[in-house]
Structures are given as structure tokens and as C-alpha cells.
Amino acid sequence: MKTALITGVTGQDGSYLAELLLANGYTVHGIISRSSSFNTERIDPFYRDPHDPEARLFLHYGDLADGTSLRRILENVRPDEIYNLGAQSHVMVSFQQPEYTADIVATGTLRLLESVRDYQAHTGRSVRIYQAGSSEMFGSTPPPQREISRFAPRSPYGVAKVAAFHYGVNYREAYDLFVACGILFNHESPRRGETFVTRKISRAVGRIRVGLQENLYLGNLGAKRDWGYAGDYVEAMWRMLQAEAPGDYVVATGVAYSVGEFCEEAFSAAGLNWRNHVRVDPRYLRPAEVQHLCGDATKARNELGWRPTVAFVDLVRMMVEHDTELAQQERTLQAAGHKVKPHTAVPA
Ligand code: NAP
Ligand code: GDD
Image 1 (cartoon, rainbow, N blue to C red):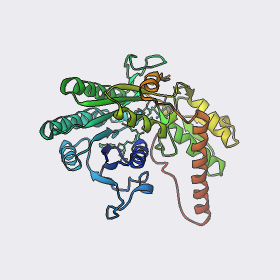
Image 2: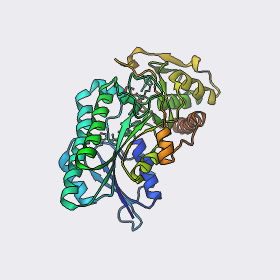
Image 3: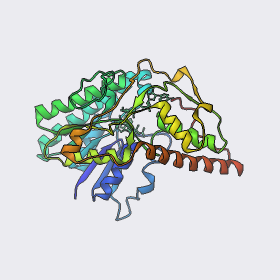
Image 4: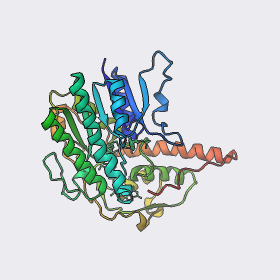
């Protein structure tokens, strides 16, 4: 049975990928960052105590900023496959913390590649690496974007992902490492971080629906994104590492909607009119915006046999239903006298 190592295992994708790999019989090791509060909420439901003989998911403290920790974990875990999903992944935050974003997203990837290069050289074992690239790398290049489209990033995050992508390609060419770069378009789920726009919307819809909130403040309603379901997208990552040779693949649905259209669909799923609740607040506008992303995943379909299974409308409904339940729980607790509040202090 194979062993996989995941950076960013506590994130949206890391949690779905860990579940997929466990279901496929893998032993899975995840790297987690030290945090003063718990950050394993997404993996807690399927994590088993390591004393349990059935346990196949193991966690290690480490950080993409800390090359020593990466090397040590690699030596201990001896993985067949590495999925590099760890990142400061928020585009708006990257304008506020560009150096940190570059250090984790770009140089962090380099640290990992260097560790694997040395590890392979001295052990003779081969390791396959998945690098989490992003449609944000295409930036201002008009759709449809495909593997050969020009990278024209519009944010420090996008620039750092382009650098990480080129590091991956360079290590493939220079050292013959098996590095597959996924260029994934936006993918969402009920586990999406609450500061990304889709989840911000579905959380607000749930709370407005049960009477806990009146308005939702957003930035650019005209931006268009190609939104898919995260559960489908981790399957594409896995398929990339099962291929005969490493390659670069766009993963997308091929259909784009605006932020306003997402609002319309989400509010109407709850029987609400979005225009009565959505307000624009300029503080959510970005210094430079990516206006239109819509991917062409023909290569992934032809070479990996991958295709999305969840349509836009079903994705929106899945998120709204989940977040309506959360809002109902919140209301029940409030009615019982508990002081509960969502994490509204975090700007998004
Ligand atoms: P996410 O939910 O933000 O998760 C990011 C993960 O990275 C978290 O586990 C986070 O840990 C971890 N992390 C943050 N800083 C780190 C560091 N210094 N060292 C190691 N780990 C660190 O992101 P996601 O949506 O799952 O995305 C996964 C990857 O795909 C990211 O690289 C992202 O940039 C990329 N991507 C995402 C999309 C998308 O639409 N979701 C599209 C294209 C590419 P904490 O939980 O402790 O913060
Ligand atoms: N977050 C946020 N908050 N975005 C808003 C808001 C708001 O209040 N109002 C409008 N938007 C717009 C953003 O300006 C952007 O055009 C769009 O909604 C999507 O924003 P996000 O959900 O934050 O995602 P993103 O497209 O910037 O980045 C995500 O997708 C990339 C792939 O294209 C992230 O997951 C990245 O990590 C990923 O690489």
C-alpha cells in the first residue's frame, strides 16, 4: 500500500484529499502548522487516535517556511507521493502580506523540492509530487484559459504561484523529478474557508434565512469565476500522480458565473431576493482584479479521464443547505442562552 504526505492537510482540499487517499487504501501523513487554537476541524471527523490499530492518518508539525522540518518529516515518513497544498491561499490577504505569501507559496515549494531532490539522491527512492497551481496564474489572460495560455498574474499570490509552477517544471527537467502541476480553477464546498466569496455568501444566506443577519457586504460583484466542487478536484490531483509521466493540467468545469449570479442562485435557493440583502463595500475591492476565469480542461479529460460531477446549481445548493443547518444550530444555541457568534472579526 502507498504512503502519501500532504502539506496543507487541514485546508479544504487537504481534508478531501486525505479522505480520498484513505478510501483508496493509502497511509496518509499530513503536515500541520502550530496554532494557538485548534485548526484540525476539517479532518477531525475521520481522524483516529494513533493508538487505534486501524489508524492510517498521522499528523506532523511542520511548516513550508521551515526547510528542516520538511526534511525531517520526509525522512521519517518515506512517502511515495507528496501533495503540496499548503499555502497562504487568500488573494486579498496576499496584497496585505506579499512577502509572507511569496515565502510560503513560492519559496516554500522550492524548499520542498530541494528536500525531495536530496532525499531521492541519497535513498534511491522515487517520490511523485503534486504541485497546487492556480487559475489565478492566468490573471488578465482572457478565457478560455488552457495549459498553453499566458500567465499574467494580477496579485502577489498569483505571482508566487507562477514562480512555484516554474520551480516544479524546472525540477522536472533538471533533476528528472516526477512533478505534476495542477492548474485548478476555483473549487468550493461546505468546507470552504469562510473568507472566500462563495462561502461568505452561503454563510450569510443561512443566517439571513433564520433571522440572524440582515445584510451581506461584498466587493466586486461582476468578477466571473469557473466554480467546481472540491471533492471532484482532489480526484484530479490523485489521477495526475497515477499517470505514466508527469504533466501540467487545467482542472475546470468550463462554465463561469459572476459573483452576482452566485448570489442570485444562493439567495433564491433559500427563497430570498439577493438584491434586498447584498450591499457593496469598497473595502472588499482588490488593488488589481482578475475579472474573468473560465478553464478548458480538455487535456485532463482526454489524458486522465477526469470530468466534474457536480454542476454549479447543485454546488450552490449543497453549500446553502449546509450553512442553513449551521445557522439553525446557532439560533438554537442562542435561544438556549449561549453566546455564540460566527468568526465575523476576520476581514474577507
Ligand atoms: P486552504 O483551505 O486555505 O488551505 C491551505 C492549507 O495550507 C491549510 O491547511 C493551512 O494550514 C496550510 N498552510 C498555511 N500556511 C502554511 C505554511 N506556512 N506551511 C504549511 N502549511 C500552511 O486552501 P485550499 O482551498 O484547500 O487550497 C489548497 C491549495 O490549492 C492551496 O495551495 C491553494 O493555493 C491552491 N488552490 C486552491 C484553489 C481553490 O479554489 N480552492 C484553486 C487553485 C489552487 P492552516 O489551516 O493551519 O492555516
Ligand atoms: N473573498 C471575497 N470577499 N471575494 C469577493 C468579495 C468578498 O467580499 N466580493 C467580491 N469578491 C470577488 C473577488 O474580488 C474575486 O473576484 C471573486 O469574488 C472570488 O474571490 P475569492 O472567493 O476570494 O477567490 P479567488 O478567485 O480570489 O481565489 C481563489 O481561487 C483561486 C483560483 O482561481 C482562492 O481559492 C485561491 O487560493 C485560488 O488559487
